[in-house]
Length: 306
View 1 (cartoon, helix red, strand yellow):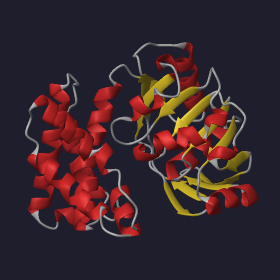
View 2 (spheres, one colour; view 1 turned 45 degrees about the vertical axis):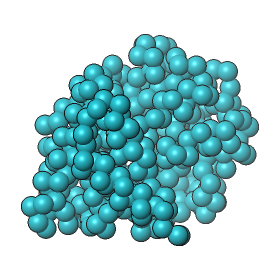
View 3 (cartoon, one colour; view 1 turned 180 degrees about the horizontal axis):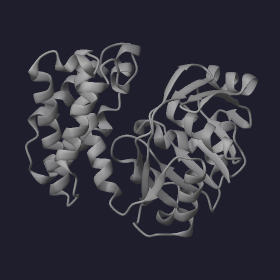
View 4 (tube, one colour; view 1 turned 60 degrees about the vertical axis):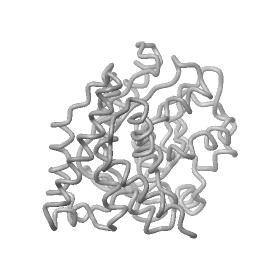
């Protein structure tokens, strides 16, 4: 397949590298010129549990430089950049191009639907980990999965081809009609840990220096899941709570992406996570005081002069 990765940070580059290793024609699209130049010059240095190698059969360019229509565009940008990124990358959007969002947060389906028909828009969630240590170098250790479905919940040949393509690259993908439950569960997880770390500048492990950290995280999880249930989405609070407890115990030094954004002086994804949850909660007349309090605090951080 001709595949474009829109947003070639850690996750996008990892996916692009694995798909290129499976002999697909992959183009990384990003605005990080240092990363793009490193990939063009030296290839993508990829480290996984199976070892370190260099993936050289990758194109790398800015979104507005790509002019060959792709069969599939996988979007990894932050939600707030989705529309602008797809507008810049119009050269890869042909009449049959499929779009897949594996982004964090809510609101991505609506943004992708502005650029392709519903049957060619797919929404998904992934648990694959990835880190970018320097330009051109990405690592991913441990296993992960992908769950996805079309935006209109119909099984199409494009969906089946996408699942087969991702599985062929060893990325463990399934078509899942209940993908929205998985998406809301990930939102609940991120609304708790990402936002608490962003506000406190704690690592994940630091949050259990007192019992208050875990208790507060679990209250946020309960609020978000309650909003999902009000929207008819069967998110599993116990499953998310177990994932939060596991992260607190085993991901001690991890700095979530929202904390990394705060430390780097970048705008966070707070509106696509807590902001979207609070908006949905207000519509359902559900009180979410902990989730809303963190939203206001991260908005204050985002509003600081950078």
